[in-house]
Length: 272
Image (cartoon, one colour):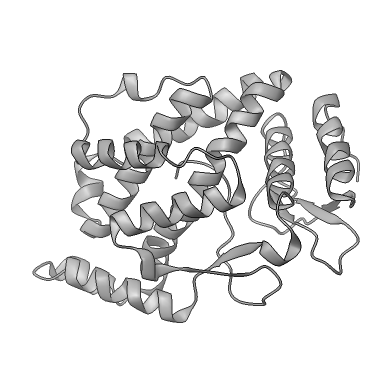
């Protein structure tokens, strides 16, 4: 693959090999919808794979490779037998769907949408992806901020784009045409996530918005999240479970041993 890797990203790739004992292999995957994805090595694998799509472009692509390297490093902080991965299968999907059915009572337009599989999956897995990705991504962004100054401008650009998506999602029409559970959960999680990025990753997001809906709940969840301050995969899971319990979403996913072949909800890392 003809791909020029920045020196700092190349050093991070070498760090992954040094700390995990397995190298990173960059593989071209042209039809992949995302720009960069990863498959961390399992016990029987000889290497970690980072997939690069034909949509790859600089500088965002370099930033995403770095994110994936930090993701692998975090996973390998735990022993193989202690690693857990999030799974959201059919039973969890049904749990979520029943919850949304309560939200749309008295709303024929939204009730009709519950019959559209693609719409329902977008609602449910959008929330689940936030839930299982944002608590870990806080510390990935912190590491990028502290250890990768060469990527700082790109990091700011990517996070700013996500912030603008967050602001667009606050529009009244979005709230009106979303189930309350989906809208409120996304709002609260994004607000807590952005607040934490302000504190640990050199951002200033929340100073640029007015009073948010659900501000008391946001403040309560932010305070509770800060009480789990460890930078470990186990703490990531504890923060995810805290958010899920707070938002009554705990039956939308589960944690399984990493070698299980269950339907996993793969994530990118950031505010959605």
